[in-house]
Length: 347
Image 1: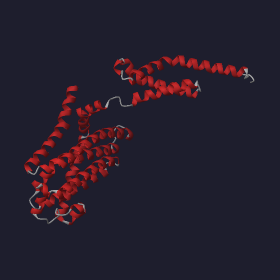
Image 2: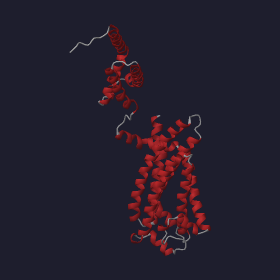
Image 3: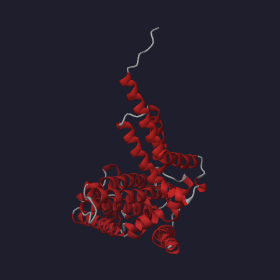
């Protein structure tokens, strides 16, 4: 085999490139080694052993590493060096921008004040959503009161058997009391839960369109409730119907309220970003609203359990109100008292 002949000019070019690569490494290697040491300790769960200086230096060292990697690629330096920098950059990325907490710690922070704090941050939007829901209920009630045909436009036909305008008091009362007579209204309750869960998700998801679809959705959903309320009110069963609904309704409707408020918060932040850019305002509002929605899912699960068990077992109107009021008080205290006290103690 013939020996490879390297021309003098090419040999000098290789030596220059090697020298350049060595110089580049020597100038920055100390920062790379320090960053790799920090990353390795954090990956092994030894973050507590890091000094405050190392923790504070992590973002700066990461940005310096990215700068070195960019220069190395543009200068076509040693391939091995580039591979090393790319690997270290990938490991550092997850530590700088990834979630640095365990599931248990996240849940502790979420239930310990994070959820309630996010809800207090959208207090204005909660009042807007509450006003919209009350208006929707009144609209449904007044529409059916003025023309009973509106009932069939608002309430799905497969749920309007005996619970229709003109039904007798005995027939309506029979749907509210007695486990053996509640099958019909139980189906309606299951429908309400399924429908409200969908409304909660959509009210939040459609908030990006300046909150208009979220508001319309809340109005339509509560108009259905208003229409059904009128049917029972005409036979003097308002107290009994509200008591039946309150067992799971105080939790379920509260969840709808928060979901609608979360959607309105996102839409309002996009429409009126204030001093922030539209993108920044939407991002901040989205993070806050997403935290609220995580709690809404939990509330809907609680409402489903109450609807599935408590409503079936309790036939006394007074006890129904007691259960519904207790759940409402629990949520109000948790959202607006419990979290606030923890925050004030910590500050």
